[in-house]
Image 1 (cartoon, rainbow, N blue to C red):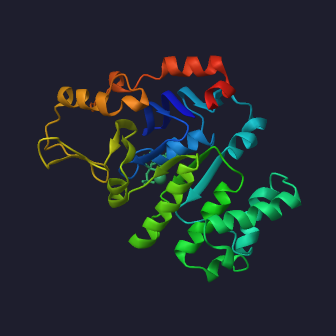
Image 2 (image 1 turned 90 degrees about the vertical axis):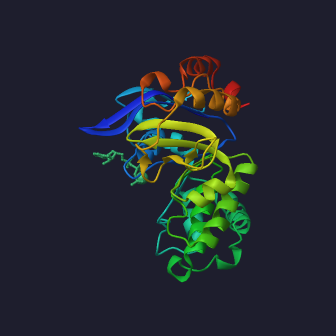
Image 3 (image 1 turned 60 degrees about the horizontal axis):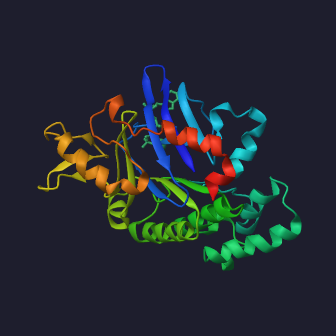
Length: 296
Ligand SMILES: Nc1ncnc2c1ncn2[C@@H]1O[C@H](COP(=O)(O)OP(=O)(O)OP(=O)(O)O)[C@@H](O)[C@H]1O
Ligand SMILES: [Mg+2]
């Protein structure tokens, strides 16, 4: 679905993303975590082609998007649903109109819009709010509209940048359950979050970024704890804990085992190029096979 192969994107002296290799499969649910400024939004903007990498390759649905002509960018973005922390609803449009608008801009037929919008509002359990304006809704309800709008065009991947950042814990959990349901129905989900509790509870794949480097990619929790101790080795909200000695050889074995479902060949925690997951051959295989093969 999404493959990053040795992707680097710097902003002058600021490291956006450095030599990142990640393979997100169709149907995956992936949390993207890391301290502020780590490169999470940069990662997302590269998928959306709002940014171009300095080097490396990004493949989306079997297509190398680093070579995509400008005119094909709208089509690329139609494959992606975006959910934002601040909802980004149109204040002067009703709930129904906000969701319908996402279909109108890509010239969907009126008949299809009339069928699809109520269906998606019902899925999000806000059909009774269809005629309300965003400022007449609670934050949780607004985010339901945000998700409805993101999925109305049936994207292949749903990308959420801190979707629960403005919500209280109970509402955040509701929203997470909704997104999980969308994933269960087959949509790939990539979610940036700082919500440690939720990540720990959901036990999904966690990709951690720190200062532009992918430092962890495994199923489980938000921060990593050593197997034999409760000591926090890596807490993405603060970055590496220099007090803790990293025994990467011991952990390497564990993670190869844990991550076998993702096709990891080598994994480590040192911030070095050698320790990035090697996606080169995967990129080549999928590009040669084409999109249809890839998506089946
Ligand atoms: N357009 C830009 N121009 C210059 N520097 C940028 C730009 N966008 C991002 N950066 C820098 O790149 C680094 C990564 O930023 P990014 O927005 O990806 O972080 P983040 O992980 O999303 O952080 P947060 O959790 O605060 O949203 C930061 O050092 C940031 O200052
Ligand atoms: Mg960000």
